[in-house]
Length: 405
Ligand SMILES: *Cc1c(COP(=O)(O)O)cnc(C)c1O
Image 1: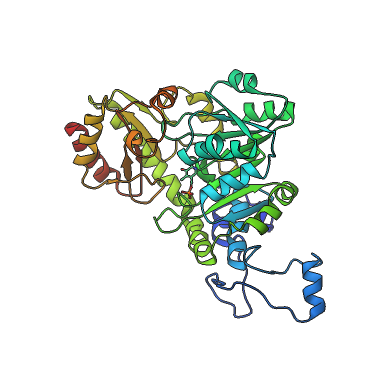
Image 2: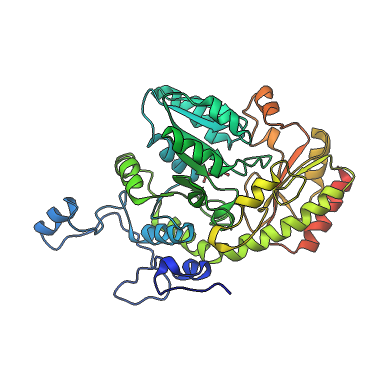
């Protein structure tokens, strides 16, 4: 049993942080956290308004800037992450965009892994260049490639690990050490690992980004996102862009996500445990050519995954909730998907419901054939997000669909 060292929330066990962290009770003493559906806030006097706008007290001004329900979600997620500060946004992409654009200006350069969530790639390749920011994409497991891509104007490294869709692992500590050497900042999209399995700030990263839409909600309901890091960095890089470009998370969605956090540890542990068992059975099936699961010794970056997907202070080792496997060609992949009866066909992930998708024709269809080949993505690959259903039922469904592939 982990030892709690004090009554301070930052010293609580993870389970306690997720149930109690960040709660703000109103004068009514409600049990559950309140949803503060309000746009703005009132001041006792003209002087009080003056003081608040001057920053003399940290009361709320306007929900584009901050809101009590959103603040509860931010504080609870920050406690879980072990970050000084957190700011929440309306979607994971609003968070990735903010995280990157807040750290660069025209003439700067970004280095990122080649395997990325499709919209992350779009921001780097199609959007940032319009503002004079260039990106070099490297094979992410190769640290020498990150070093070789560095230019005098490199300001940011973007890491996604495990990466979408083939679960490639980047050595976060090694890339962070390189960043420190050259004075660049490291942003980690930690969606696939979730804050339960991987703590990038402890490995040397500067900013962690989430799509809260995935594991943090975990029940398929709302969109949300967050950026986390040191208080001063978040203030300097993101405070004014948040205030003036308006990516604010709705208080209602923040409330759903706040309650998602309560069960996050339980869900991710169980889903990861089920995924590990299923990965071994899938790997043994005759129709499966290759499997990628960070918890299996045949994963190309297994040793790095073992080192960094440990849950930080949470003391848990895990391969995560996602599995990718190659069935040879598109027809086999489609046969597999169409034979599923319990598992849904969906491009979402981190949900309590298991879901499978064919990246080539869905999430990664906007990439060129050449770009897909660079990351090893061919037409037979399927990505499976393992949910909370019973492992026996899942294997019956997956095994039957593999037979049909
Ligand atoms: C889903 C996802 C995002 C974007 O999140 P949204 O909430 O859908 O905007 C970003 N990065 C990764 C790795 C994702 O899986």
